[in-house]
Amino acid sequence: MIPVLWALVLASQGRPSGLLLVLFIAGSFIMRSAGVIMNDLVDRSFDRQVTRTQTRPLASGALRPWHAVLFLGVLLAVAVYLLLFLNPLAIRLGPVALVLAVIYPFTKRFFRVPQLFLGLAFGWGAVMAWAAVRNQLDPAVWLLYAAVICWSLAYDTIYALQDIEDDLRIGVNSSAILFGAHMWIAVGIIETAMLVLLATAGWLESLNAVFYAGLAGVAGFLSQQVRRLRGEVSPSEALSMFKQHTVIGLVILIGIWAGTL
Image (cartoon, rainbow, N blue to C red; front, top):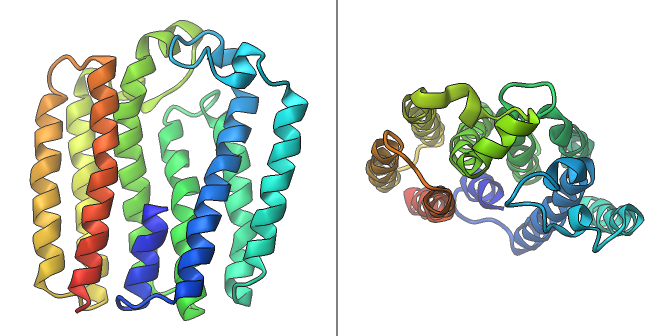
């Protein structure tokens, strides 16, 4: 939801319509829920072998696959209904979100950095939100989309630290495994790219100095996380660091809004 709000606020110069806010907040919740169902359906055999995920309803057998498929159908039907309230360009972009959500759960089987594809899926809502506001896709939205991809790659790499031993044992790919001991360098580079992309998007949209001050504060906080990644990080600490990115996203959102004033 947060990247969608970034796009809505930036594209509308700080004044998004109430209808679009309701539609995209609801749509984010529904599509995120649908994505979780698809992921848990595809990964239920893996989840049974991972300590953190073995109690998930499908993995544990508390729910049957047909239960999940049925509820998934309900969610997608609601998502299509919400989509019909948008302009034609945003409607045409909608199916891409579904395709990305369907493909993502399979990527950890053949792609060394599945978290990158997660960013492609999670960030697409921002592209749709921009199209819904302006009925066109300006250069700034692609910079924003690239920033979301970088952000997702960074925070989900941290999240993947929780499962790194189980993932190695069962043969699942993750960026945490790929980056290994150099993860702190990789995350630092990726987050720097995110900040540069956001700053450039803000410059194209003529945001004021408050936005850049917010980015500077985010940069300082992220640098502390990167330094912490140089050492041993426990699963509980990795989860805590991952959750901090919600606050980071909200700070950026406030900065975008304040930067339009």
